[in-house]
Image (cartoon, rainbow, N blue to C red):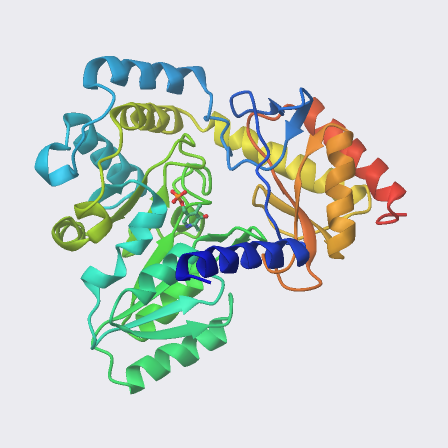
Length: 400
Ligand SMILES: *Cc1c(COP(=O)(O)O)cnc(C)c1O
């Protein structure tokens, strides 16, 4: 057998293994824009509970209009990285608008938050430095940390005692600079990081603090600025990364925000910024419109909070166990992977699209349906979903 044949057989074996383990991921094809209701390819219309469309902006008329307008005024694309000829006035405006929204000095845009995290650590931290990371941090943070030369420390998820132990260890090991980095919100449980306490600990050991705000920017905190606002830390977090691909419009794009010297160095050294194309003008124009909407009124954020409180209360009253909290990520616990899949399948038949998560996405025995609430859901959608959960849950013996 020649090398190529052997290689392709090896790849096919890997695919077969994924299938046999029951872990093969299929793409579900939608034929409508993102919204409370979506139509799937077989023609069924279902209520969507699995988009990160927290504020319902993915197909908001004002956002679409702004994207059209930017296409007309600034073109389709720039065919360039930022520093050659890929920076337009609107890119600078969006960076300024994000800085003022987040309460930072400056912001740098990336093609994705994955790139923001991937290109964050290597330029800022060297061999003498330490980075301390929550064990459940997002894959892009893990990858970004792998690419830097700093010494790596990991603390047990959301465990402040272990964080302190790691801070002590990093100091004992003689670290020059220490950066603690955590997701502001963890996407599997909707857990909000205990940022106020993390900040206190970081201060005690003279460490910097960075957060990934992908599941927070736009709606967490009284005016939607994020986890730092929610925890009373506006202006007190050193580095914030985030996405334009979730609550902030849902297209794509990411950013890193912080002190101006940090952002300036990232513009010089961050590889996904230097070697990858600029964010498309239509997305940039639309993102400015998103910030106009969010800064102009807390209406969407308030509706999301009210929808979330309603759904959490009603699904619990129906007899389901949920992960407690206030976040619009509402994990409905099933524990058993097979049952979780059956529940998701039955919900779809009943017109509710909510996916099951099981090992290895979450720990063994922690299978769940992860629902995500949106400001675009109306009361009738939420009521219909609770009724579908109740019916399917009883049929499957998950609730009494
Ligand atoms: C979604 C997500 C990302 C990646 O964002 P993209 O802009 O889609 O690349 C990074 N970090 C966290 C915590 C996320 O949830």
